[in-house]
Image (tube, rainbow, N blue to C red):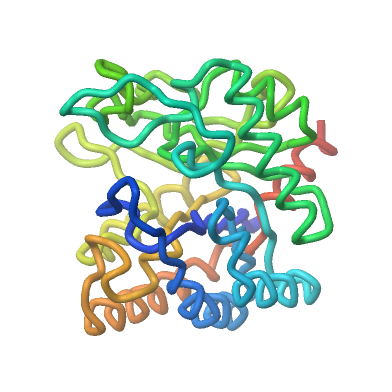
Length: 293
């Protein structure tokens, strides 16, 4: 049986952005915890795609580490955009219920300026043009895809089929996240961009599940690996935030003990995945899909 592709995507961003308050500094201490995860991936021959946002691009410790790992063929470095601290800055209307902004809330010219700014910073720091991308807070639309294509991006992995973010408030009063409940789950093009959706499948009692560690869901993830293994899908996508690798870096993994449990679960999960999957970066998978057309 042909082995399927296993894609690891890591939203590589500041510390515990779930609890971040506007006007406070965004820490990047989670950069010190990234090498442990990369080492685990290396052990299994997996190649994480580090989807890197504005503040992490400016963390020299992180930059030097992932550049070395990329040069060794162990990972990919892609782009991840959070609208709230990527320049240029633009004031949106707010009220007491406002949350963090989605890029798609901004005027199109501001959207483009932010994409241009982070792309130029990425190139200046890493020395190459990224081709893979994931939107902050999962929010993309056709205009976003069009701008990504204009600036040289090739692959996106923002869409979460079967899942709606319509209960996640944006910055502008009444602006809610995208509803992907009716989106395609197969690889397809959007405004010239190859969309490789996150692997999301139906679960029990009308719920969905995806390969995202949540502290108590190892059995669910193992079940999902088997479901995709026995399906006609040719890839399985895992996701995590870089800050979830650090104690107190997220609401999910607060303690040293929870981090150790995470790594025990990952060891079991990755051992299972090696039976039927081969590790590839998002770039490798996407370019192969394009070339096979």
